[in-house]
Amino acid sequence: MNSSSAQTSTWKSGVASCGVGPSRSLTLVMRRAGRVESSWVETRPPTGARQGSSPRRTGEPVTVPYPDPAVITLLGELPCLAPVGGRVSTQLDSTLPALRITKVSDREGPTPQEATPLFQVEVWAEDEFIAGSLAWALRNEWPSAKRQLVGDTLVYGRWIAADPTPSPDPETDLPRFLVTVGIRLSGATPS
Image (cartoon, rainbow, N blue to C red; front, side):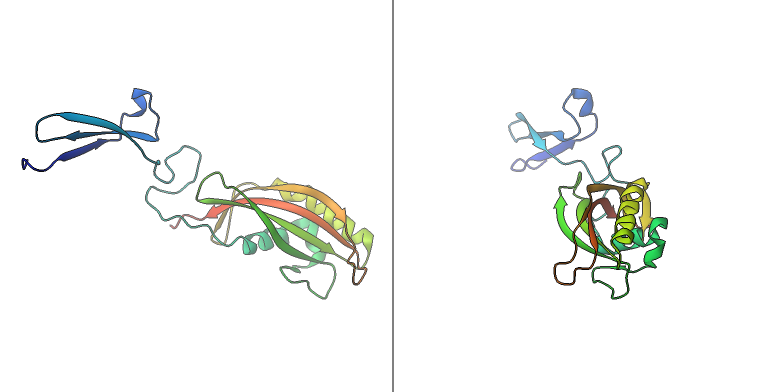
């Protein structure tokens, strides 16, 4: 070793056995005079290192996909919404019944690789009872999902944030029900 340089070694394995936990590592720095200094360095575990977090392999890039296509696909696939005939979009279809979705907020994701957006789903129909029936059917079927792959999006969970509420359109007086849904998602691991 050159007398003017320092040698650095980092031990990351076995740290948990010292009672420190997976988010710290011990760094030893050896100086020219033979004196040993130690310090604790905060480190984040690699992506997917925590058990039960993300199915990603270590070192993969973090990608959170645009959530709208996944929500539109999932809503369109619900059996209870068959009368809608696939008319689910961010724009209202002129043929009713139809659903329009709008992202209204985000909750903090459990990990940086995940997102948990909330969407307002507008259920439109020419009749209040049809709109209400579809909205309540959506409320009952939306949370029944298991982990699934939708395009390039891995969906971990779905929930209802607010029950259906009648809200006729103020301009046209058409029946409309509002349902707020949540989804937890991340990008799919490339194969």
